[in-house]
Length: 90
Image (cartoon, rainbow, N blue to C red; front, side, top):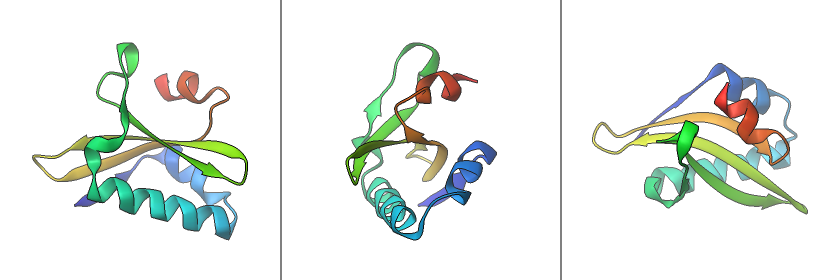
């Protein structure tokens, strides 16, 4: 499975602490093994899936688009719920 990233995702990940980065890497590996596992979004975000997991006490969201036929996952965004979907639409 090939994983691509967007500039928005790269900016968010660049600021992470090592422990949070390790959990993000585990989430990406989980998505690679099971790309259909994320919640499929509707409306403006059709085709986008969101994987949710906990870091300390906060729920973190990882947005991605998966093309299982071409075996490609595009990581679109990462962060907490606050303004996450609004910024993802832009």
